[in-house]
Image 1 (spheres, rainbow, N blue to C red):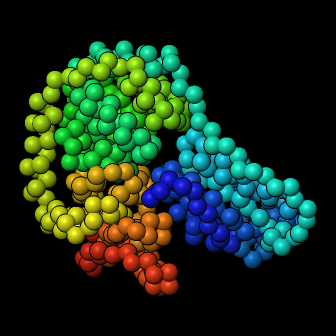
Image 2 (cartoon, rainbow, N blue to C red):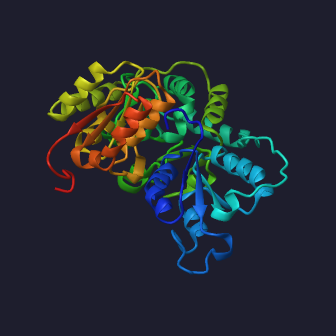
Image 3 (tube, rainbow, N blue to C red):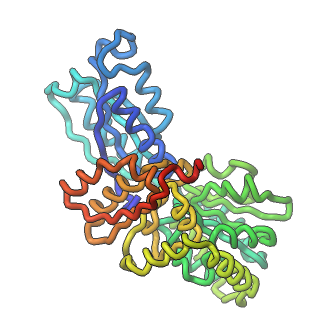
Length: 396
């Protein structure tokens, strides 16, 4: 999540896999290209219910529910190609975790293998017909709106250029924060995006499920929707868009920029009015905003905040200032309570030069308090800000 690069981990079967299940499910929801190496009971006993240590029925089937790709290594000769295929699946298209299962009697086997070079990361070609249809809608829009999610993180500069070309606000939440700097006048938080949605005539969703917008805010026949997503299944959730662009976010945005007129549009006063409304409302949310301002003042500009499922984290999703992608890390729609501190250690290991802060409540922090030992062992100087209310505050 901090770099977009793949990473691997290993666990024993059964309880080991189930203990890691919440993390794998979170990786699935946040698009993290993780490779899980999962043990298995002796190969001759798999799925026979003999009661082996750590046995779980249909473990491979379980893995397929929470990963993009799962396979079993049957012997040394299988391993090179299966590893290459798993990494290709994890990093191609919509990035998500992959898993390889290997029986305990297979791990130690030796045999002749043929090396397999890394397989190419695949990405779809941009369809010029779809681009032309989207350009026609955007050119005719008087109140365009952009929604950008976790799939847009690596297209930040292009999205900012498009937003300024169209004079279109860019709404982000959770994983999309920082796609454009949150202090930019076109960067809108969720409440402002909601207000703008009511009057928008064309909406461009980039790498986002558009869940709140389409399931809670509602649509009407006059609202034209363009979906740009590398996952073709994402385009048609909730309602059929007027234009579906199946492409990597950066490739699609660059194609739109090349086809759109370069003439600047007049400044929209409605955006400024909505931003002023939000600034006044959010300033009243104390003490949460005071804590967030203090953290922002102490954190270097390129520092990273990892939020847990806690009230200050909920406010951070709306109001913490972020000037670039991958500097505000959220568990996304899984909202995995207790994930922040361990994730922050991973962020620190991936970005040793950065200041990293984990925001957690006392209940959430206690899920991984033992990882303080990991921080000491690997010299990972993560700062944990723990809000002590003596309970699980959100439940209360």
